[in-house]
Length: 331
Image (cartoon, rainbow, N blue to C red; front, side):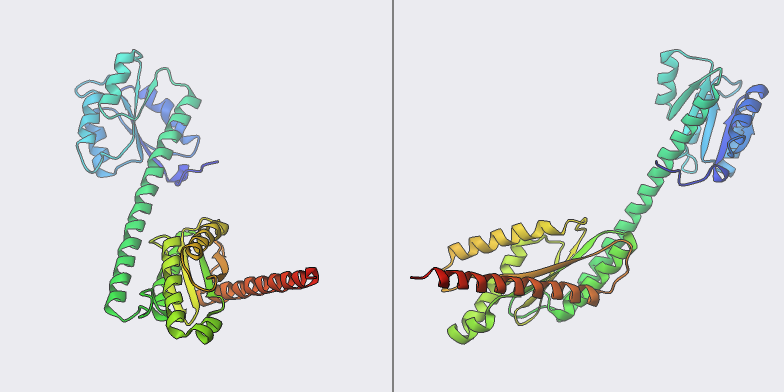
C-alpha cells in the first residue's frame, strides 16, 4: 500500500465556491478526515489566499460571479508561486465540453455536483499522492545530481594524484580506497545495493618461475583487460598489487551471481585465442553490502578476499580429486 508523504493533518486545502452551503459541506467532509481547510467565496479572495500561503491542493468552483473558475485557474498557473498546485474543478456543469475545458485550463481533475463524499475524498487523496510523489522524484533527482557532481569532484581529485597502477592502468590500492569509499558512502546514504569482487590470478608465481617475469607481467596486463571488458564503466576496477584485483560494483541490485558467467566467458575466449602454454584462471570471491547494514570498505574487501580463497581451495581440491581418479584409471 502506498502512503502519502504528508499526513492529512499536514495537508492544507483551499476550497473556492461562491455558495456558502457548498463550502460548509466540503469543509465538513474534508475536516472530518483530518485535513486542514481554508475557504474563499470568490476568485479574487482565492488568488490572494493562494499567493500569500500556497495550499497543497485547491478545490475550485467554475461558475462564480466577477471571475469564474477558469480565469482563476489561468492566473494560478501563470504564477511561479502557485503553478505547481493541483486544482480539482467542482461544478454542476457535467457536459464533456466543460470537462475538456477544465483540463485545457490546467486542472488536474473534475468533480461534478452534487458531491459524493467518497468520490471527493478519493479524488483529493489521488491528486495529493501524485503531487507528493512528483515532489519526491524531484528531490531524488536533485540528490542524484549532487551525487554525480560529488563523484566528478572525486574523480578530478584522483586525476590530480598518482592513484593508478603503472603496469595495468587500473586504479592502485590507494586509488581504489579513495574512490570506492566515496561510492560506498553514497550507496549507504541512498540505500542502493553494492558489491565487492576480489579476484586472484591463479598460478602467477609458477608462471614467473618457469617463464619469467616478463610473461608474468603480460598476464597481469591481460587480466586487467579481461576485467575491464567484463565489467561496466561505472564499476571501479583496481589492482591491489601482485596478482590481486578488486572491483567495487555499485547498483548491483542484489544479484551477485550475474558477474560470473560474463567473466568466465571472456576468460574462456581469451584462452582459446592465445597461445600461452597455460590456461589463464582467476579465483573469485564476491560479497554484497546489504541495505540495512553499515559496513566499512575494509570489511567488505576482507570478506570478498576470504570468499576468494574458498573458491581457490575448492578448485584445488577438484583438481586433486581429478588427478587421483585419472591415476586410478591408468593401466
